[in-house]
Length: 124
Ligand code: HEC
Image (cartoon, rainbow, N blue to C red; front, top):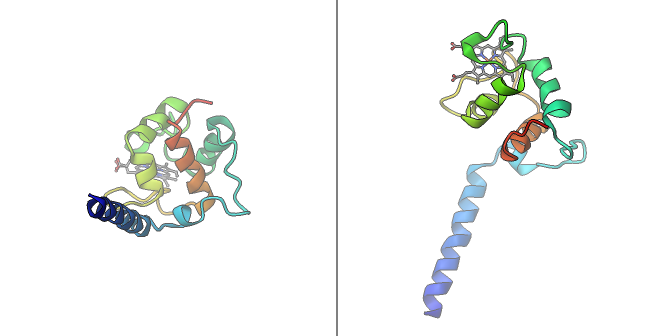
């Protein structure tokens, strides 16, 4: 019995090691570096301004490219919940890289988006 338990916990440790390596993007490795303040992430103060700077020019209520709206909460929470917001900004395989034609967002900004999505993309 003891051997089995040791074996199981060994496997658990190994699987943690593998998943850690699998997700080794900038944000996962350095989620809270000194230059990146991810405390107090809110929709109004953090996420909406980021959308104004990077997304709304193509995804506003009036010009909703690809039927995607990022300039209001309803539109943005839709893509936050269906996975496309993270997939596109993090440039995961199978998603269109966003912002279109621009560099990937900074790791700090990605971290804040991730934090907001993980919190359930609240309207705060
Ligand atoms: C220069 C214009 C432009 C900017 C800026 C831009 N996008 Fe897009 N976006 C597009 C285009 C073009 C498409 C593809 C539309 C289509 O063909 O359906 C698209 C599609 C998308 C989609 C849908 C992808 C899918 O697979 O259905 C999402 C989500 C998205 N953009 C999010 C964003 C976010 C978030 C930002 C800001 C970080 C952003 N976009 C910035 C032009 C832009």
